[in-house]
Amino acid sequence: MIYVHIPLCKSFCTYCDFYSEITSKTREDAFTKEVCAEILRRRGEMDRTLHTLYFGGGTPSLLSLQNLTRILLSLEEAGMGGPYTEFTMEANPDDIVAMGPGYIRSLASLGVNRISVGVQSLDDGMLRWMNRRHDAAAAVKAVEIVREGGIENISIDLIFGFSNLSDEVWEDTVRKAIDLRPAHISCYQLSVEGGSKLAEMVEDGLYEEASDEACRRQYDHLASALSAAGYDHYEISNFALPGFRAKHNSGYWARQPYVGLGPSAHSFTGTSRKWNSHQISGYTSTSEELSDEDIRVERIMLSLRTADGIAEKDLLPLTRKGDVDRLVSEGALKRRAARIRIPEDRFFVSDEIIRELI
Image (cartoon, rainbow, N blue to C red; front, side):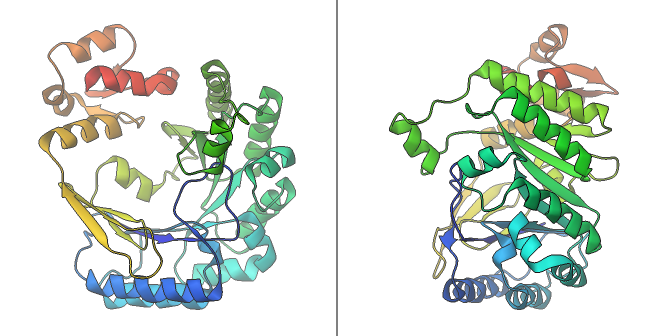
């Protein structure tokens, strides 16, 4: 598994705290040079158990095809080249609309077989509040263009749980998302992250977080509507049509090793983590070994985020005697085919359930 972080944006979203810089040709070229050098330095690190590639950001659709090709050639030279079982590129709707189906066909010719479109909302008022660069019409058009360009494995992102999002607007957004029929939908509850514009707004008294009750209503509506439309709720925040679960992200939840490339990217071996510093040129890395307790907590937390859960024989040694039986009797956990999972109607309070086990 390989993740490449593209730290380029044209503007910053209200809620975002991911590392990124305002894009320019100079910054893009400097980043490409640095990440290609990093790839060659880290030759041989990749575990091919799950051979996926994911370009995230930032805004990967701001990377020129020339620089994207340079990165892919460096991966090839370092023994990390394709073909990949899944090659995902994140893209902003307005970039897709501006470049058209030819851009999508070019990505496909380079091996991209999955596009994650940063829709976030299908309401123009909400998009303006988020400081997104596109409107709802562009989001719809972008999905159409990706299909026209020949890529059917389309994921869209949505956000709920902000205090100025009414239930009516949210229900309309979910309906419109279903009408688009993407293969995959990732949906996240808004959180206030330090360093974001939203965190400043909270500190200045300009924004108040949504209530747990409102967030629960919106989450429950999402899960119900997508289930009725044929989507599999296979992870707390992720829904897929049959056959379209995200392979790369599923690898994270299974604790598969991965290599993270680029500024602020993280890597994982199973027993250690490495992360890069937040700067386009001259970034460095720091690493740490995971303790047995770190690994225990991760195994419980990550496996129980998924609808597949964890084999009971693997979970019991990680937990206190009696805790699993107690939570099953309370309905917080469910047994199915020798596995333990959190029932879908308890996904919203999964953090509380997992804390009981940890």
